[in-house]
Image (cartoon, rainbow, N blue to C red; front, side, top):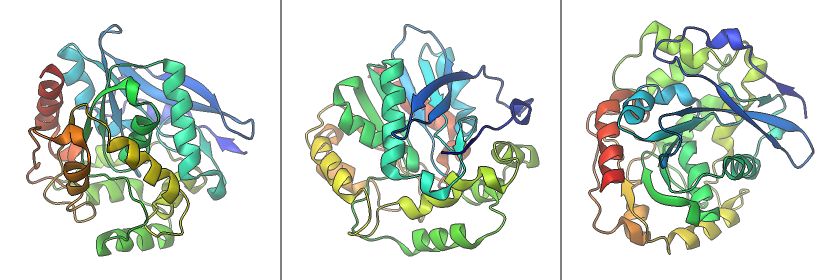
Length: 299
């Protein structure tokens, strides 16, 4: 597998992102080593809060969460998925699959030996993160779900289909522009450039390009069977599960309902709708979300 690694200088002096990089290498089934980057801030002996990003963002999405939560005594860990951020990037489109991503992040989670985890997940951070919960339920203490899901081939919204079509046809793939389009406020020029930073050219964007096609929205797609099996675990998951979907994201509108109806740990929790926030709710409501995470952990 041919793999690219974004030069470190691309990440110098990004606004609001002064964090020391950490790396762990996992090995793909074909023997290729893949270096995964993650931010790890706050007390090392505190229970970890795992912040998982989606498409086409990276851990820069959590730049406002990391210092706030760390200052409140939490260990905060924010990885970059393979193909994103400072993590390695396979070049070939067929180097990416849903199951490969789950395997890569499973190996990373086990290598760090994280336990007592509070997961906050959004977009593909949920598609992958919730699979981690299903695979390692004993490692997780609680889960916060925002603007994501665990699809099992049951269809898709018009908004998602429009996004999928756009993602496959647009050239070049405008990462910062896409993130800005999913935010109610306007990102600054420097913030948009930070979302573009991991990608010196289009050859680095295979993961960002292919991800929308990997969402299992049709019954004959790959990973439907695996996600159905994961739901069986989640339907027995009694640890606290909180939903905090935003009110201005057409792609995931109504997405909280399956968790509220099917996951026992969601019963009686203080679920919230994040008002005036888009798909990337982390950009629109970081203070509110940090308060929700902190309160949920302490409760």
